[in-house]
Length: 140
Image (cartoon, rainbow, N blue to C red; front, top):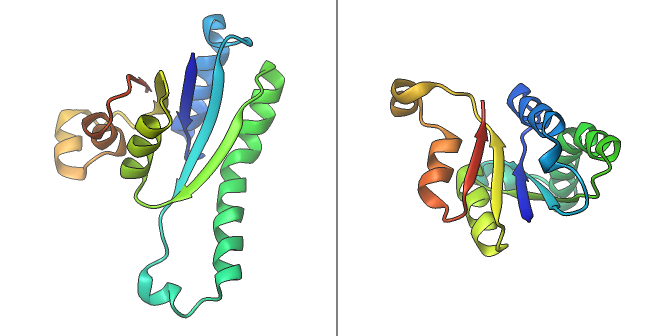
């Protein structure tokens, strides 16, 4: 199974990784994992004043903060995962990557605000669910 794991480095990402570790059916060589993190873009007016190399370095550093503990986790579980970082609005980028990458499953942690919280606050998970055709496994 080709699985996309959306990660932001939050406690909810850690909870999703804990779910993976606790369920043997998700481990092993029969699954192909890609871990995706999405950084919010620097506002356009600010980006115009910042050197391109500095911007690239900033986005790479932000991705590395998310990926470092996940790489350690994946290695400990014997999972050889790919890692992809992108810039944009997380819900849009995650849904687009899941669909265009022809993944069989998208996994992500969720805050679990509930219906009222999602209506008031919005939720990346809710927006991904609405904009993605790939089955989504949310771990709360």
